[in-house]
Amino acid sequence: MMPPPGWYPDPHAPHRQRWWDGTAWTEHRRAPEAPATPPPGGGTGRTKAVALTATGVVLAAAIVTGAVVLGGGDGDGTTTRTAPTTTPAHTPGPPEPTPESSTSEPSADDPAVVEDQLNGITFPLLDGWVRPQHVAQDDVVMTTDGTYDCPGGVGLCRHGMVVSRTVTENDEKSPEALAKADISEAADEAYDRDSLGRELHGGMTSHQVVRSGPVAVAGRAGFLVRWRVTTAKGPGGYVQSLVFPSSVGTESPVLVRYVFDAGEDGPPLADMDRVTKGIRPFGDADTGGGVGSSIGPTH
Image 1 (cartoon, rainbow, N blue to C red):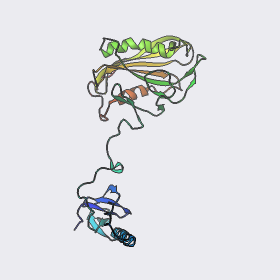
Image 2: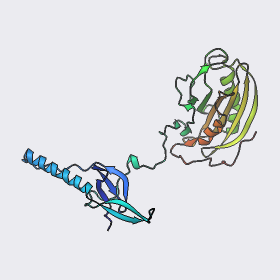
Image 3: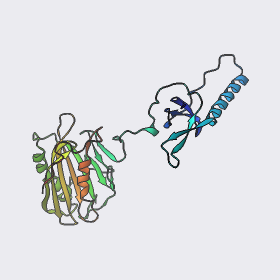
Image 4: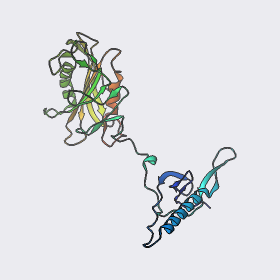
């Protein structure tokens, strides 16, 4: 007969207890319950003797185990498992989950996720991207790793940057109208003149719309516009403005700007789509495209 479910000495670690579910060992483990406090007046020698005796019982219980034959294994159709033969420890019932047996989905604390707490969303942190460090610009959620001397001969540049903002100073709520209105400013700040008036790339000489259309983001219908920007110095780059309604609070529009250098040193252009696809509301790791997920951006 199989031993009943309960806490037993762990056959691989006699100093700990392990949960037996009635058929097999689980990954739930705990420290043995502390022994009861000896009654007042007990001698020191007696206390030590009791402790040694208890330790001997635990070790003996760990050693005295039985081999239970179960069906469904390999070879001759049997599998041997070591099962407890002692009386289960106190505290019946299923154990509480432990960190080593947890199967929960990754949270916003996952190292591969970046939080935007204001807008209630998370971004996937792709290979080659890092959380912002020593970045003067506001609202940056991630950048490519490292810096380089800007082509314009002044300042330090980064090959890629993603910025997340809340649109609050505009009565317009249409993602399409907001994205189309923002793309020019985004391109100017990235490749023409920065906030300090510097031409980090020698100034912007022209642009071309390479993508524009509706797209689903975090289960909401949004809109994006992407430009290919040509600069006087350096390879230029790509700028994208993405707008979608927030899923929290007043559902104010969320604006996400992407700035990617062109050329072999810039990040893969496909990372724009990977980041967009990976945006999730807080606590909803399984949310996909949702509403409008079948809608594809058009050229």
